[in-house]
Image (cartoon, rainbow, N blue to C red):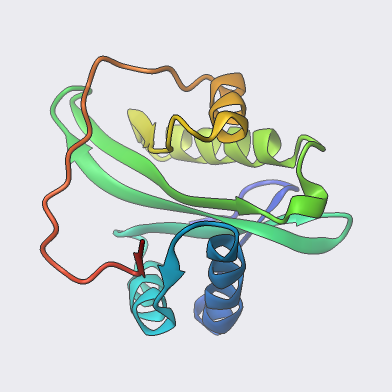
Length: 158
C-alpha cells in the first residue's frame, strides 16, 4: 500500500531496531518497563504483513520525531474493518507543534481510503494531553468499557 503524506513515513523491516529504541524512549517516561525482545517480536509481523496493520514514523523538521502503530481487525458494530491506534509517541521536544494532530489526520485519511470503518484508541484518563489530541482529531468517548484478558506476555509491565 502507498505511504501517506508529509508528516508520516512508512516504516519497514529495516527500521525494527529504531522502532524498538523509540518505544523504549516512549516507555522511559512512564511507570512501565519495556521488554525489548517482546517489542521486537511485536513489531516484526506488522512490518512484514499489511494484514496486521501499519507502522509509520512521524516526521518534523526533516527528522524522525515519533511513531504511530495502527493495528487492524474487524468489527460488527461498524460492519467491517476497524483499526486501533495501538501506540503513538512524539518526542517531548516536538509536542505542541501540531504534529500529533497532523499524523492522526493522515492516519485517518489512509484508513478511510482503505475501507476502515472505525478507528479506536486507548489512553488513560490521567493523560489529558493525549486525550486533547485525540479529541481534536475527532475521537469521542463512548459508553463502552475496555476489558482485557491477557493470553501472553506483554511488551511492558508496570
